[in-house]
Image (cartoon, rainbow, N blue to C red; front, side, top):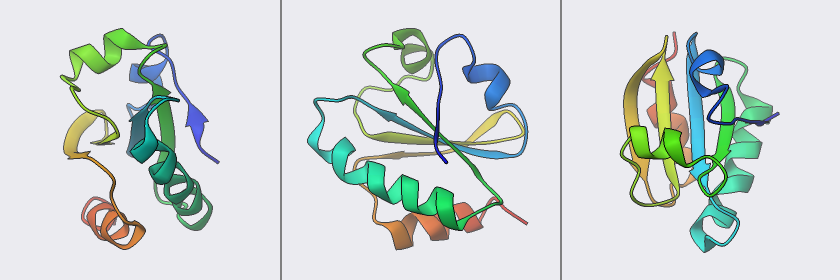
Length: 103
């Protein structure tokens, strides 16, 4: 399951383990293409926590992370940003990237 985050709980919810956050907006076409892939990976992978954040409703986190384009996927490991992917990313490529950060 993909958990929706807010500016208020982002730091707390992404401080442990490997966490992928999908920064998106309802009006963004590529975001709508990316979302089912994130949902699919969330079903398949138990070693990564999958979250999403609507940038229109939660502007301060996106601003603090310097997100200028969406979709942007941020991968954090134990609270530190270890990767940033901007634009639509196919499932196979995303799986490969996540494998780098999981044991």
